Image (cartoon, rainbow over all chains, first blue to last red; front, top):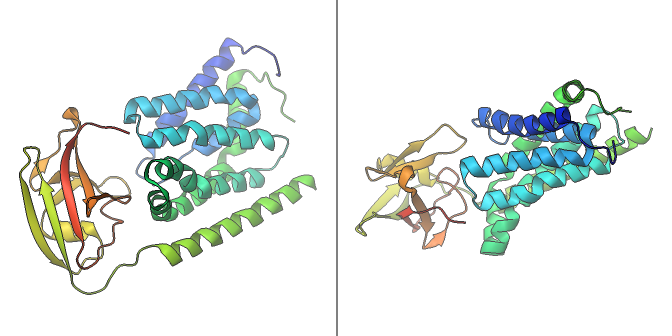
Length: 171
Length: 133
């Protein structure tokens, strides 16, 4: 996979993954901080590696184009690529439980990561109160991420592999 | 075995983080006050006119206090209320209108559901045009 050009099929799958993340998050909007973004990013990164950043870019652009490029959008520019990076760091680790816990930890840290632009723009008090008020949502995010990743990760990896033509040999 | 060790470490980190977050929230989150609170709410419309309400309420959050006076309405489909109507005027999103909530002139970091009110608080609700950073 390293150094190999993307096939047209793989490019289509990467684009669709970005679109799917956006659509499914919108569909689950009534559930606070519960969405399948983490499982898609982890599954896609485990299959495609760094190239999953293309899907992440599609997702982030769609979010900005539809909901506006607000201060929250700035945090998306580093939060979701960070999840790709963390996944790449542990890419050789197997086991859905491990990845479910990683996604849960990511959910717990989500509010703190989102508070950074508010911290820069408004100072410590603004950043801290933003983070503090979001803690219940961070815990919901943690539980939601754990459940979704534990339930769907292996299936999603297989589905991505099938869609992409199984061009990557998974260990 | 390596996978099991990594999983165990991840679980320990998750538990520690959850405990830390809960402790911070319990320690620092503003607590609702029981009993009657007197707050002032000023609404500033697009033409610059403003009205003021002196509200006595037992509600612990701003949403309850404002809804008791039928001052606000909005989209309740999400986790919290997104206020679109204040004092009978509905902000026109096509013109990038929105209602800006401030407390004592300072930007609020929480929505009406999560804003805990205290006796003597003053809130301003200003019709604002244009979305910015």
